[in-house]
Structure formats: structure tokens, C-alpha cells
Image (cartoon, rainbow, N blue to C red; front, side, top):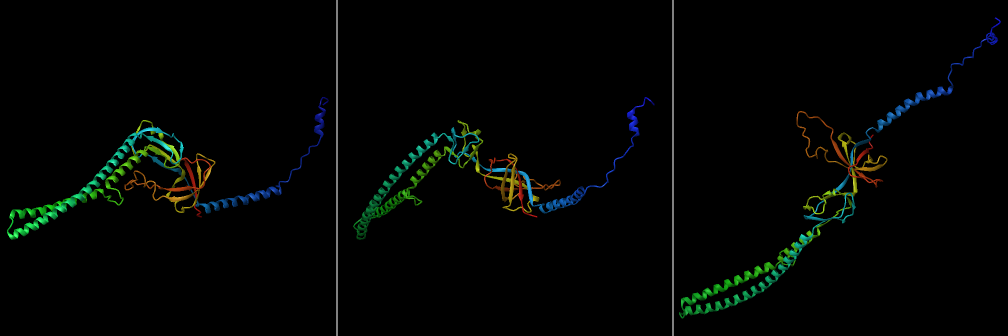
Length: 359
């Protein structure tokens, strides 16, 4: 035992003691927290449920909506070869700006021909005026001949009754009276025809021949002016690939498109089951995929008169044995309020949310 460790002996001789155990009770603060959570969570759930119950049906939304803008198909009124193009793709233009020009030379020649026809018509009218004067003189001459023929007939009739003339002379006098009357009728008809040719026929005061020539000249001048094609409205030029110098462009065929920049709206296609509480004038909130942080305000401007399938090129025919009911969509036009911060491009995808105010 002499070799025993003194430190171990000291530890072994020291009595063992235990720490006091803390009482198994929670602080009052934690108990109140648990009680608050027990009551708050059901109240929160009930509040959310009540909100969704009251607000259900008030807001209707769709992502089947797109920005729309008026588009004008610009086509020339006259055909011809393109000699100048003054615009490029996506260029902004003002109403009256020159878009392109058609070769005007053939129409200048047509205008010169119309001027010549007008001069010819005026000469013809002057000639007809002279003919009218000649017809009046012919009438006077025919009346003088009738007077002489009637006097000769009166003498021959008196002589015939007294037996101092022949039947042949008497018959000749009768024939001369009839011929003079026929000549008067012919002269009067010629004068009436000349007066008709000089007449206007429509109360304009100008002879008909001159009116026809003037109309032809105005058309030729109008066609010459239409060789310069101008923008009908303010907008953005699109589809200018067909405008190539040297190409022959026919009249009435669209040569380019003009997207009108001052009128944009949204066409939203809502399900037919969403139209119960929708009315014109209800506010709408618009968000665009192209501009995630931008919100646009609008209002319901009109509700479509038919579903999209009714206006399709080939409407669905459901009169068959395999008919399946499909929820139809109705186009709703949303008018945009104010000026958006970013430009609205035709065809942009849009999310539309309408506040119907229904509970």
C-alpha cells in the first residue's frame, strides 16, 4: 500500500454530492405564447376563408389576351412601276408623308390627251353654236318659201275656179305649199337638235360635250396625283419588303401595312362561364409579359357579339354523334386608360384581371 497514489486517496475520501433538480414547470411567458398561437391560428384561417368566400367571383382573369392596334393596308389606287421608296421597315410616319412613288409619265400623257379632248369639245360646241344660227336662217327661208307657195296656190285656185288655168299648174302649186311646210319642219328639227347638243342636261350651264371632256381631264389629273402614295394616318410602317424600285405594283393590292400608333387596346378572350357579372365600364388591370414590372389600367369597353368559333373561317359543326362540349371563349375589348410608360406593340401577350364588384 506504500506505492498508492496520494491523489486517488484524497478523491476517494471526499464525499459525493448531487446538484439539486430544477422544478418541471414552464415560465409564464411561454405558456401565454402557446395560448396565443392556439387561438390566433384558427382565427387567421377563419379570416382567410371568409375573405376568399366574400371575394370569390369578384375578380375574373385570363391570360388569353393580346394587345391589338388598328392596321391599315396601304395599296396604290393606280398601277405602275415603283420609281422611289421613301420609307423603311418600322419607320414612324405622320399623316400625309410620302411612302412611295409610281412612275407618273404614263399619267402625264393621259392628262395631256384629256386636255386635247377638252379643246376638241370646245371647238365642237362652237361649231354647233354656228349650226344653230344656220338652222334659224333655214327656218326663216323656209317660211318665206311657204308664204310664196301659199300665194301662188291662192292664185291658181282662183284661176282654176274661173277656168283660166290647167290642172297641172294647180297641182304644182299644191305641191309647192306642201314642200315648203316640210322644209320648215326639217329646219325646226335641225335647230332643236343643235340646241340639245349645246344644252347642259344637268343645269350646270356648260354643254354636255364639255362636261364629259372636263370629267375625263379631272380623272386624268387625279390619277396623276395618286402616283404619289401618302400615309393616311400617323403610325409605324411595316411589311415594306414588297416595295422594291422597278417592281410593277397593281392597283388595289396592299403594298405595305401601317400600324396606327395612337389607338391600342387589349382583346381578352374570356370563358363563357366568366361573363355572368361582367359589364361594360368595369375596371381592369393589365400586365404584359414583355414588361413584367409594368401595370396598365383599363376598362371593359365592349363584350363580343359572338364567340371566337362563330367568327372562324370554318365554324365547328357539332351535329354529330361524337359531340364533346367545349367551353367557348368570348372576345372582350379592354380600353387602355392613360398613356403607358412603355410602347404597346401589337400582339403582345397580356394578363387581364377584371374587378366585377360582385360578392
